[in-house]
Length: 128
Image (cartoon, rainbow, N blue to C red; front, top):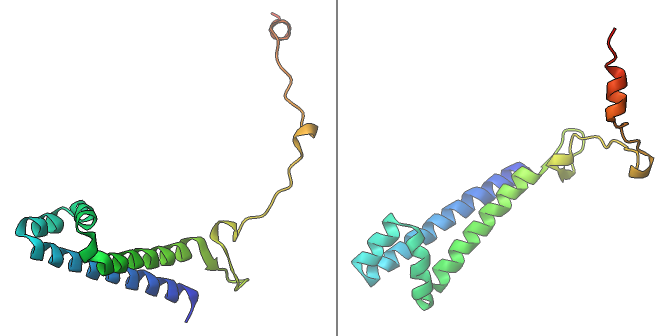
């Protein structure tokens, strides 16, 4: 299995586990009361408040949700940051894959552009 397929699989499994855990938390919220269930279903940020208030009941769904987020992020970072190039099959950072390093002179050897002073400016603008 190639690395790209593995990362896409991680994203899919992570998103699915997050959705299952979110549904699980919503069902538990409906078991607590109708208002908590409707609030968690139609206003998802309220789910975090529900998790904080009723933490002992939600240990496993919360761990399942966090595992899903971590797995999806791992897949996304793998797709965006690391990818094998055609010439080099070892994973390299994506932003360095096709760049060449240019050697620049150090700061001490650089010459600053000459300043144009008012007297030089007046000398340049002599009328004909």
